[in-house]
Length: 310
Image 1 (cartoon, helix red, strand yellow):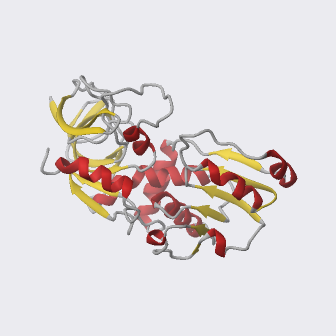
Image 2 (cartoon, helix red, strand yellow; image 1 turned 90 degrees about the vertical axis):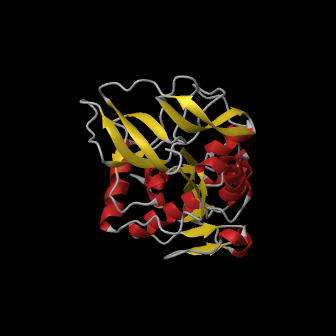
């Protein structure tokens, strides 16, 4: 079985090619993908070659872990049904390329236990379920953010979840192209913010150079949550952190519970994915779409449309 897929042959060498899918097993389903998202965090690192060593990493590979489509085959142990619209958080179901993430393809073989149902009304935004789950995972069971660094897609989702939980965070954003779109919270530049007593700061920037600045903005005993993905080694000056008794926490990958939680919030209106998809492109135009996603500051989320490539 063949599929069209985005293939990273090497850093900065990207094309759309035919790839071979492995035969599905009884616990697998086959999904015809409608939309997939481009991550400006991990995928940008894969594209640039800056991704730190990671189990299973190598080229050629199919990137992506944000896909939405329809089940066309369902194994007897998959728990899925033919015709169901689902979110797929990536796939390793390729026979001739690596699928460390593996979601940017027209057809996927996926473990039925890993996919999540989507309503019929879900459009391109359905591909953002993992990003919402990532934001939820960073916050679940912990203090709500008082300050969020970065007003990209992840920062906006963190802010929306915080507002839904009764919070009123401040968001830092230095790029004017990303300052708009706040509902229920304020977006400021760091220079315009005089506060120095934040109890909990969530950093979505992925920039380790900002950590020292954040320590100075903490209240004593405050926490900094590293919610982005850092290619360079995070570090901080010890004396200011010592004086503040600063605490650090790393937010890792989302869990099935996070996925189920944000799915329920979307269904009952407590969370919205509206306004996050700013750009769409035909899947066959993926090389140009990836450059736009990584280079255009006005691009919050680029979605590839696979419907003509299935």
